[in-house]
Amino acid sequence: MSHIKVGLKPEQIKAIQEICKSFNNEPGELINVLHKTQGYFGYLPAEVQEVIAANLNISVAKVYGVVTFYSFFTMIPKGKHPISVCTGTACYVRGAEKVLDEFKRILEIKVGETSADGKFSLSCLRCVGACGLAPVVLVGEKVYGRVSPDGVKDIIKEYQD
Image (cartoon, rainbow, N blue to C red; front, side, top):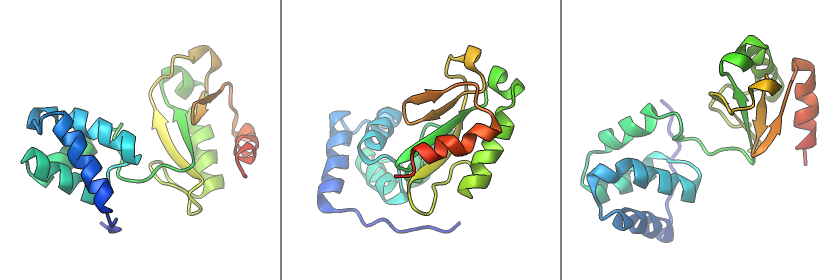
């Protein structure tokens, strides 16, 4: 697996240590520590996981296992405009997969990746509770309903700053 080294600045290390300390460096609080740390950094690269493991006195393998198990956590920085395609039942039945394929084709990225320019990242999610608008796409917090493959390029165009 290719691995990009992320140099952590002293203040970033200190921030992670503070987050760990806010949960009393309790190994049982790993998920909460990861949530809060991802909220701060936006993602959880290996170097961040190493600092957490050291502070909670658990193995890096255990931290990595939790990060890779839960789809909420990511080791890849999200794009400026994170795109999420709902693949819940209603959206799936109404063609979400074709919409997703169109995003992949136009942006030239796979699910879980970020475009080379850092503008867009692509992910799937399960049910946003807007089933009547299926298929649904989120760009950041903005919801797009009844998206067709033809509508994908217009959505992307809105964010080409």
